[in-house]
Length: 230
Image (cartoon, rainbow, N blue to C red; front, side):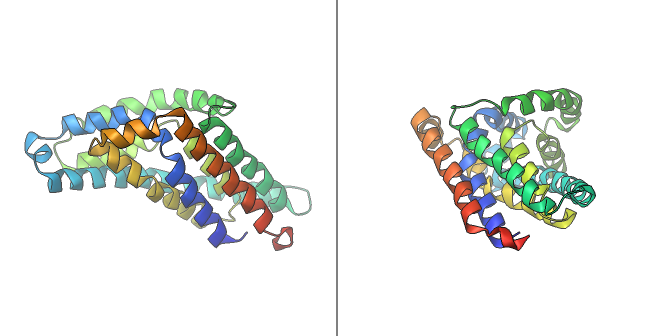
């Protein structure tokens, strides 16, 4: 697999698709904002440090998930009794990415079932986050971010599907870390309540333009990567 193209495509997908996080994560970021000490909220620098550590916890969970899925994908692909298993797995994961674009554009909600499955596990994990509230220290912010990283999200699940075929657990972890970094601008905007930006990206036409861009990124990805790489 052409790793530079893969990571760049994932970064663009996360950067564009993270507007989907606004609806799902705004309440969580709001909970963090209200649960930190007053003196922290009154200092932009201090609050930024809490928000950064909070997101570091989230990225840690993404990276761990990428390591695990990358390892499982490597073992599974090696067991497939077919020629060029990477070629087939690439198309399967790529299909997920295009389905993601259709989902974010609200044209086809097929990926909603993944979030419903994830909701079961989230009901088990979510209560663990209560022990980090109120967020009085940076360690609590990190712990809450670790929990937040497992929030059911079709965007995360689609990139995880791609991490199945990157080759090994290290690449899977790096892929998810790349994705997580690309979502930081949107989530920092949420943290600082940039209402104008938030209202803008919530418009259906904006979401559909972004969804189309994601679909085009991955359609181009399939044409750029020659099948002879496998």
